Amino acid sequence: MDNNKYVSIDKFQEVINIFNPCIDDYLYIMDIKNDFYYISPNAVERFDLSENQFYHVVESLQKIVYPSDFDLLVKDVEQILSGEKDFHNLQYRWLDKKGEPLWINCRGKVLNDPEGEPEFLVGCINEIGRKQKADNVSGLLGESSLRNELLIRKDEHMSGFLLRLGIDNFKEINENRGMDYGDMILKRTAECIQEAILKGQKLYRIVADEFVVIDLEGRSVDDALQLYKNIQSRIDQFIEENLYEVFYTISAGILDLAAVEDHSYYHLMRYAEFALNEAKNGGRNKSYVYLQTDYDLFQRKKDLIHIMRQAVNHDFEGFEAYFQPIVDIGKNRLFSAETLLRFRTPETGVIAPSEFIPLLEESNLIIPVGKWVLYKAMEACSIIQKKIPDFRVSVNLSYIQVLKSNILEDILAGIKKYQLKEGSILIELTESGFLESNSFFLNFCEGLRQNGIPLALDDFGTGYSNFHYLYNLNPSTIKIDRSFTLKALSNSYERNLLQHMIDMTHSIDLKLCVEGIETRQELNDICEMGPDYIQGFYFGKPYPLEQFMADFVEDKVILAE
Image: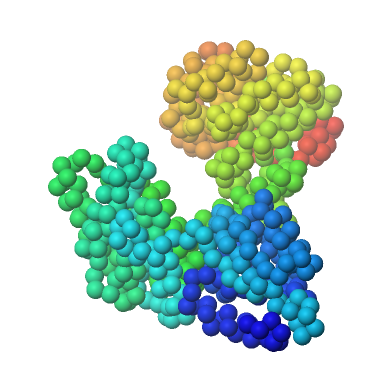
């Protein structure tokens, strides 16, 4: 193009839009004077862009440029803006929709205005590692071709289905039998699928061990399920003909295209990936039909994990330590408090522990958060002991903390930091999650014993209550869950069982705490059985430390009459 001939940015945008459905690459224009950027609309479906046009170019691009590559981009742009060079040719990484880095080659040419001043940078971005249009192993069309097919049709009313198939444990096949054997399995699997599909259906191989069948002929989910069964049958036949030299299965995620509103390539692939993962998580060799409600729940979990990760990185903002009183029923006085974790944000409000704690464990964020709440409990204990010298605080630990962190060292360091006497901190572990054969877990329990740190078995009776645990773990206290307590209050058999548990506990010099007491009648009935400690709303709900101090420590209220 003649560098002296003036062309408006609107014309460039029109050209970019015309070429958008025709090429795999991304055309762009940067208005240097107005600090404005416009890129092919299909880039929004591939990269972590909210829209395909924006101002404050460098600042906006920082959000999608791989952090360690950003300085390279800044330096190159500065050279263009200063007039030091009139071209742009840089290989670096952008982040895709999943936050994964993708190598790109960004090339461009500076165009001057009629006065000879730099006005536009126009060019093209292509993915260096873009998947081939056709896969050489299976002989099938690849992801790029699938993407183009869906881009062309995204504005149409789609009816039919998308079937995403994945070979289960394919990595093990490669590791045990070698890459060549793995390629043979891929090729034969592709043939099995190809033999099963119907007229009008198209087959693509996307990532290493995954395939997509797309049906735009209006067939139903039931048809997709039948197709999956036919594919399974052909694979089983291949395995049998191969004399069971290798055994493998295939899982499927099914997407009803008519039931999905957003038909962009990015969202269709994301929904299908979710569906396939649900099938694999359900035990493999299974199918799963996409449900929006399930996906919304999955997305909420991801969002909450992200929010909690941000909270951890901002000094645990939103997390709070609450304390619920535990009463020594024989002495009729406050004996202890259980530390309970709470979480809230201005956007979400209060999140139930039953929702966020499993996500903390799933994401391993329970390790930093668990340490934080442990130290909050120790700090509270040191404060309360100035009023009640023999007061102690119990803290729940996750098995993730035990197996994946130096939690024993953290406990000992905290005891030293807050100058707590022996027995001030009681560690609670949930009975239903025991890993009695795990050496790390057993070493942790032994470490507690050696350092005089008492252990309580929480929710005893709700899981597989193996009394062998009492021998192996040597706890000082057993805690009975409210669900078990309610059964004992309404059923004579359960009541006798609880009575025997209390008697047995005392016979081996252990203490027993009953949780979940909410009324005076419940208290009277349970106290007749002779437990050592009582915990529940009857005495007090969990409170922040300041309110706990005011209600139960400073005022020295009478807890039971």
